[in-house]
Image 1 (cartoon, rainbow, N blue to C red):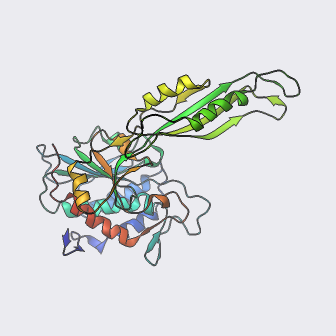
Image 2 (cartoon, rainbow, N blue to C red; image 1 turned 90 degrees about the vertical axis):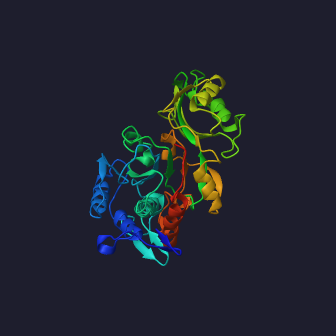
Length: 363
């Protein structure tokens, strides 16, 4: 809760704070699909503070006491998994390192700061009656868009009427988010000896298609997300220098806007290329919340700006109104020596509380 701009928490054994909690979480490796230890820790940490905890796989969630089915339910969600640390780290990625106003450590920015900020906002908000049920979920496998994270919980949650997805947005509001369509493309030729004028080079057959992916523009442009973006990111072909390759495979990363479904994009792509095009999934579509939604309007009143995000999050798994908002900066994510600024966490907790306290969402 807030008192004259000062943040106070419910009484907690050992005087734990959001920043203390984050520093302890950083010390526990939680690479995607390997989140059990940090989930165990977080489950114990919450239980020690007197809250009833639910557990499913490597996901931890809590529901405000006195659940009322006649009230809407708001979900506060962020993820506890991280990417693997890259070779550029100059600090120990699994040790919380405080330097001035910065806290360094793997997952500090993406998205540990959001996890602990949302959790402490939850603690404060449930101290008094709210016109909604409040559900906090710390979930797994976000970084790999896995099915054992938030997607596995939604069928067992009560109906959700609004959600905040905690990701580093500098506490601005992502009201739309691009979707993802990954395409495995294959050009088929005929092998032969490179010294002779025989064979049908699969690389040459792939080149016009690759150029099409580079230059094609989809007609519909989103107010928030701009154009659909296609990028060829991987290519593989050939066995040795003197053999004409009979197969060339390449991968296309497609970032969709909310004006197209992934199926619509696929249907437009296939007639324009000669290669085989196979999507890995059609499920990671774009998402958007109406600018007139009460939560968005309150965020604007609190001085937040709205934007469309090019990066994917667990918003793509949610069919109900949701927005992405959290402490930190997206550009720090997945970088060596990732960090969060301490005041960003302190400010985030206060802002989440101000945003949600007595918020009325449509039932």
